[in-house]
Amino acid sequence: MDNPRRNNNGFLVTINTLLTSFVSFAALFVAIASYRTSQKQTEIANSLAQLEFAKNDVKFLIMKSEEKSGFQQNHVLIRHQFPLHITVSPFSGVKDIVNVNGELLVFLEDIDTKATCVLAIRGAFSNEEVDRIEFIDNTRLELERLIDNAFYKSLTVRGFDVVLSVLYTDLYDRMITADLGLDGLRMEATGVRKNNVVVYSGTWSGGKGFYLDKSDPDALCPKLAKDIREMIDLTGGYPGDRGTDNLPPTLRYELMAP
Image (cartoon, rainbow, N blue to C red; front, side, top):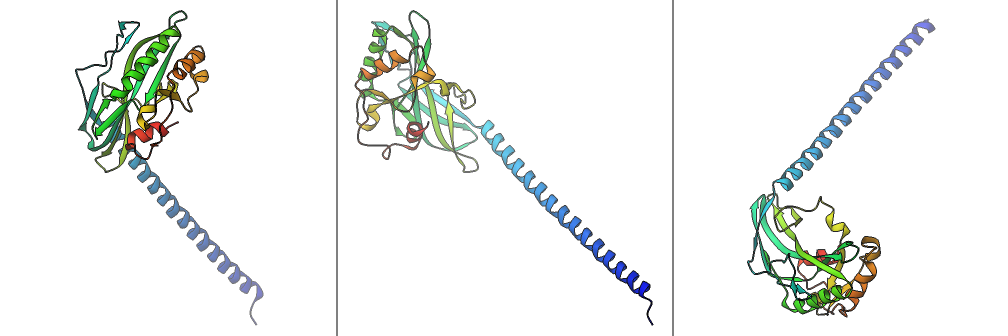
């Protein structure tokens, strides 16, 4: 007759063997999963590093026309003018330029309080060529009126600048948008544009004058907000009926950006 204790011991040995095998299998499974996770994280880290390297290596050559805007306020030439034609060419890390557009910056200062504000005018440039923009002639009279309105509100125009939005493909065929100053330096990390009051030129869509959309002068330039709203309203600005569908990619991006 079989010994029950011996049978129980055999059963326990079998259970222990199975448990040991299961634990070993589970440990192996966890190890494989951890390895795969680590491998995936390494791949992602390498991809991000590659992208960051590619972005940092991207450079453009900015060619500006000698002809400047030449605006006056109260019959005095404004000190800092902007070029009427700007061409952007790849210098390094760029495969193709898809489109270029420009945002015109107008720097305002209150004559009495010295409070300042920056207007970022979208739709002041056209781009008949993908790598070249030019100031729209029909915008000149509108901008002169805006400058005069600023003077009536005791706001001095200290100067102008241009932010270039360049849509390009890098060496890996990725489509990227870069914001550049006229010196060719990237502006994404500066945060400067977040403080600008965005103003739209009605010219881009067949409209008139200048107008505000989502931008809030009260939040961005509280000391000058009332005067800024009034000087813009005096241009009688409104959008046309052409809409954004007919606009080039970078201009659509600029006009629809928050």
